[in-house]
Image (cartoon, rainbow, N blue to C red):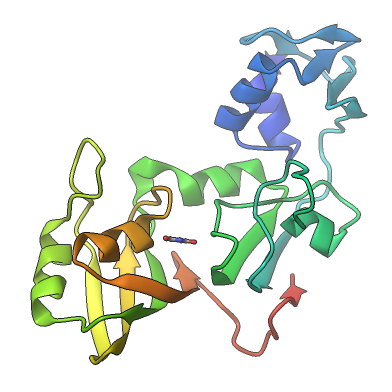
Length: 222
Ligand code: URA
């Protein structure tokens, strides 16, 4: 027997942490009864997530998606919003690894492999994420130094050191920025803290996984 959160992540449904949340939200059942956190299950038990039976040993898939603007990363149905999973309409239960804002483009990894998702997202692992960013306002060497130290975006701590490479500095500036954490709207908030507004944002890489530039916007590949 294994713990239910491990069972769900190994079945590719979600990370263990998300499994704990789904259990708390009452979305997981074992043999028709609401699962309890820490409960142990075996292959004979019928486990359902959102009333859908979960089969362990489901084939693992990982997709690289070039996310266009206008779609949301949440897997929950939100009124009138197209989610990544609606958009791809893939025959297995897959979900995005982390989130990009609705207006952010670029690399999104989509998988049913909870363990890999967890490895890429765990705050302890500090996986590098690089973005191309266009900002209103002149990006300067001073901003680069500030980002290197960490800036105040209204969280308990300063942001972790981030690397800024200035490509073009002017009324509209262009840079590459690499961050090692993933707070809500992090890059927009970092630029706001130095008086600039992000007008375009595209993720180029996550760890050693790079956006395949031959993918058109809205296309994905295994
Ligand atoms: N930072 C942001 O502000 N938005 C994203 O989508 C990703 C990182």
